[in-house]
Length: 108
Length: 125
Image 1 (cartoon, one colour):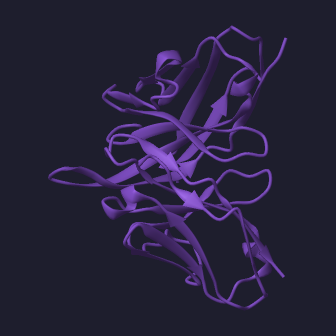
Image 2 (cartoon, chains in turn brown, green):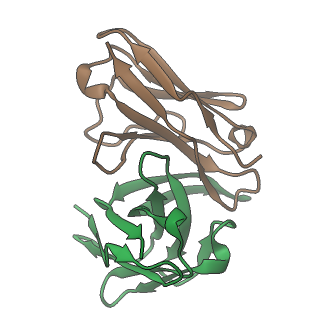
């Protein structure tokens, strides 16, 4: 498969926990990375691999993978976490980069 | 701290060639992969292709026939050319550095960091 599927929109109450998922057959063989994109800005890497955070990314962001699903979890969502989130990985051949369609996160 | 800056015309006519340059500052191009990624207005991200500093490339199969990515290590620049453009190529174009982890069978993980700020290219007559 050459696709990564994300829910188009997810909402979470302020301070609560939210999980954003990314499904694809290739995730059984390749790890995912996650990006946060706010309006008018370039994407920013928030998680890569099993559960690695770049410096400067708050520890409320975490990642996990189970079977064909990668997840990004925000524990204690803040207003500033409202953004689009994209996953990326490889396609099933491993040769090409693919992105999920993105999830718009609303913090209520 | 490595920074990337895209530059090039913001308006291209249909059927012509889109040409962009990504200038890398604060670090060397060497030993890394560099990708072009685009985002049509209001839509998601699409990987265009990558180049290794040595010059080896790989392109999205859906764009391969129209894309050329090149590198100039002396100028610390990566270039993108997309020919025969149509309105569907209107997008914000980003360059990004890719880090990878590989096992004995190939790449198992790649991530893009940092990204350039992006540049909007509109295809219109």
